[in-house]
Amino acid sequence: MSQFYQLLRWAMTESDDVEFLYRAIKSCAGSFFSRNLPGGLMLLEDFVIASEKIAASPDLDDRCPRVEAQATISSIIFISSECCDASRESDEDQIERFISVKTRIADFIITSCRKDPAGQARCVAFR
Image (cartoon, rainbow, N blue to C red):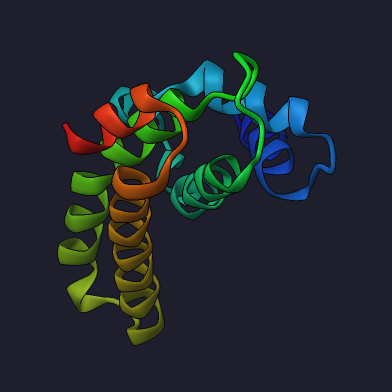
């Protein structure tokens, strides 16, 4: 499991090849967090970063998983709220990190609703 997480993290944050990023988001497509994999929440911020990269991408072809990035962010909304509520007894740094993630998610959705060049991705953001 840890190797799978390392591969996902590398593909979403460290790889210079967008094909790995696209494939990671396409294969997870919003269902990663609903599976409740042990330790899966460690990748919460990585998925936000990857979705932001995809939204900023100028690619408009079918390779670019804009809809999947929106679906992933939509699935993270409620999880980040639960994490923030559950971590109230935890570090202040951890609480600030989750609040930062929630803010980035909100900004991402608002920006995508207004400016995403893919019509389907805008529809998913509105949902």
